[in-house]
Length: 402
Image (cartoon, helix red, strand yellow):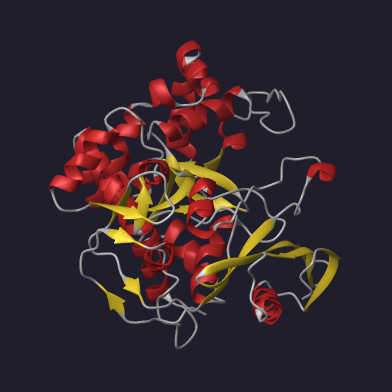
């Protein structure tokens, strides 16, 4: 569990590598006080105050990606807490394209309308093709969602026969039409059935005050998102800031300059970085960080792999899509954070039928401290209990015995 340490707040012009790590970890919530009891609504609010957005992903070999960040920062919690905030009134979160598919605080919806309006240029090619070539189908799908929502894509127009084009992205034209409407903001996700989105109209899902909020200009909206990224990262290179919400290159330097002019970003040097860094002036610099966490591959602490390497000296690649013989560390590998360093990586699988959390591989980093194995075992046992599994079994390879 993370332990809070006193924070330093005076402006800095240069950060050591160790200071940059601690600033980044504190910004991401890994230096917050350990909860006194089971995490509740306050813990979820604190998570989104820290990280801004949480990425979603369909892989379920361990646990859905969006459930893991709160566990990593606050320990075992009831996942219904996140489901309620994302799927039921009073709705605090909504799904949209933030950093990939993401859960985002509803207050940020106006700042993402420019992306919805840009769907005609920025949505994936198959969606744009349907919007251009079959506008009648798009209109029919929108009318069906309005009439029948919340509704799954496969149930929107039952008379339209799906035509699958491949095992991964075998979308029918109806699915492409629904996703075009989702990207352009004309429909949204009301809730999930398993991991399947159920679509509905925004006015039946989002709070009225959010829908009534004025639409900011594109520069203003992008400054808002950039500010969220800066606070969530603490200290960052320009590409880290831009990647957080996948902001466009065009105009990005101007947005950074505007935040610097407003005193909301400060340029600093970071030891070992080859590029300028930007510091959130309100970022905390704890004297130490005593974190212990298994971190999702899709966690905002590590989702920008070059940043993870700059901050932690940790070269990390997700190997899900590689053939098994080409994998180095495993299929679904989680970095292990101990103190202020990433000290190991663990390939995990939740074998729900057997009630076992399987450690398929466990690897220590070269500078891992002697207590790494014991700390990892404790964290794995905590995760197993959270997932409703009876025990942990190390069944694979690696140089880190757990």
